[in-house]
Image 1 (cartoon, rainbow, N blue to C red):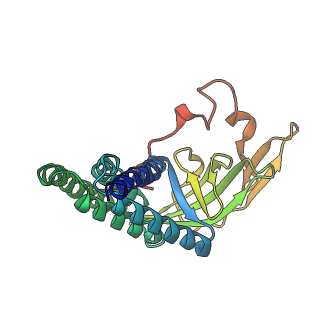
Image 2: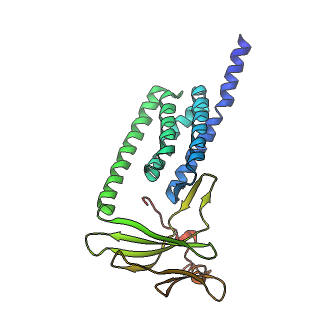
Image 3: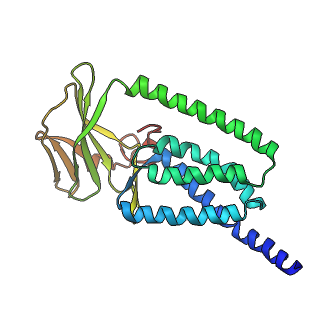
Length: 262
């Protein structure tokens, strides 16, 4: 009897290590939510992956919920989930936001931490969530509520190093048409999901009028570097974007913009 009890205790301790993988995944998603947009490229295989991981993490962590490692993860997970749900929230992303959120909530309430500690930490998290949600709605209503942004056209350069898109912005006046260039080599690509970099947008064409028909053409210069022409005029040169001087180089980390809502 004692041997069985000892084996069960050690089994729970070993299984609790799976919670480290869960908090690692949460930390990764929290980090990428600041710097990347997420695009599900294969929805069926991604769904299978989410279901399998959800069952694995939920089962193992509920089984080992009283262990120290799992209890710590249960207290930290809601903090990691906050930027994930704020920055990745959309109808398309509910497929992974709901399972992760459900596991986080269950783990927090059924974890092995004391009720007093969970009450204090839970209250702090609740206030943080309320403040962030209010800040989000204020941001959307004040800064984004008066315009409608539509991506009308997208294309990739001949070397596949850069991409551009036409952003048509409708507002209360004439609107705006912008052509934006981004690097095409900084995305994180997995089998069924791609993390698309953000923060390197470079506006190369900006006209105070929307619904314009623009002619975009990617060509190569004499050095074999990409050039973008908009209505026949050169608006972007890769030779300028990769100059070693920081003042001229477009797509280096120091030039990355901090994007909260994109």
